[in-house]
Length: 181
Image (cartoon, rainbow, N blue to C red; front, side):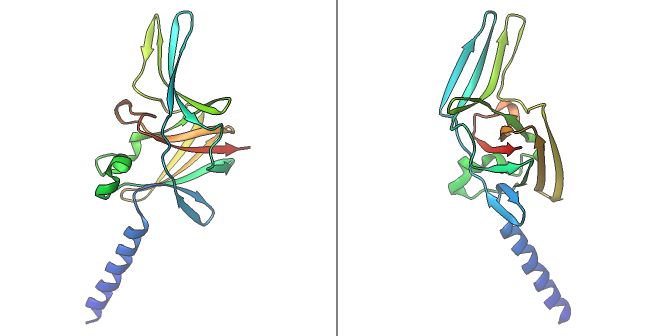
């Protein structure tokens, strides 16, 4: 009898943990864990130089509402999205992994944030979506299967977490944030 009771309690505790770990990206500030929504680009800018060109996605606003002092902390949960949220949460399906995400740095121009997705020059090109910024450090800890904590450290500025699988960086929406001094 006690064994059955103990198994029921364990099952309830595990399902409470699963309910708390809804798929998506969450920002962590102290004891507060809040879901983040992806923002989508609202235009594309092509800049041409003498022997080169760049394609940049334009995102509205000069800064993000999601602001952190010094370092940014997030949790990412993977799982099966509900049918009505499949298009916005496809990147968190179990066939993707934490390695399919990266952190990009925006370039701020007036009231826009720009994310470079392709570069072309006479002697070569790179394309296929925005790349992970080289000027940040990202510490990833697995909390349990399909749940990760990410700590991002970088210079003050505008950043985003993006799905980078097969060159999709930036095109499927990004999760924007600001690191303050």
